[in-house]
Image (tube, rainbow, N blue to C red):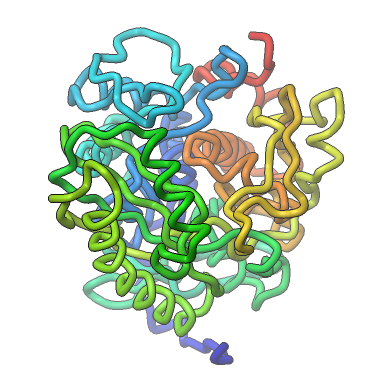
Length: 447
């Protein structure tokens, strides 16, 4: 890793705005946070390095939403549910996936509960996300890259952002770090208050891509064909031991997601290396599919992810933490803000895909509010996959739907903190819970 130290003369940067709540990162967590804060009447800005919102759905070529439900009951609601309704009812571009086949149902979702995976398209998710943000009164500032933060007396008072017109400062009463890798908290604290997750103990990196020209095939047959080739050492190098593919809404288009790379997501040199390795894999995998897998004889590459897909990188050290013990407990933790399943341990960096800490349990647990509150600052929260957690349990909260709910909790808490002029950890949980329930979140597994 290249060691660097960032110094900048903040006095020379213009302040381009002052807000009640500033959310950094427009992935699912950032969308949930910004929408929730703005709807509480707070002046809210959402900052994003790309030109569009959506996170892994739109820059990772993965417009597929998992884990809305468990055991036939919906456990994720709120803004995540609302986004799916916009995709379905306004853009007519969403469908349930038929379980076990990764095949779209090709029917409108209508008013049905979200009990299955939902597939859409990259472009529709960009549009639907923008509509949701605009209708909620969020100020969106895209094409703007966070590079630092100004800290004073245990508070972040401004985000340092490199816009196309030059570096600037965005001031706010409260902040939400929705960057995925706790970039804001890391920069503001000089590395103190965050933890790097070992990639040997978390998950591999990947790069999804789409192929067209696929004809009908039998999924079970293809899985057996692939497994035999994998065990015989006749698949491309650095691929998963199972055929990870899923149909898109466009007939004949299939998502491919069984390549992998190992490295650190918070190191530019390592990300550059992995990006190059994964892109080199893509034409090799396409050739392999044409040659070996039924239904793919005439397939061709359509597009690929904008960036390396990251499942775990850097997280915050919180005043609380999501742990294996919390997940294994019979009761929900104190101050629950998002329901989660109890299964974890996939996408291992090891050859076997499922690591030694793999654990599949029945029932529902929850993410505690304190896992969103860093020890380092009094006016900042984290959401999404950089919350405080045991790295082995990432599967329970890293999915986009859950990230959006942790974003809602962070946005509501930040708004209440800004409105009442109190530290984040002093915001009463009952007020947060009440607002989450009012906005459609599900906080009790039997409801």
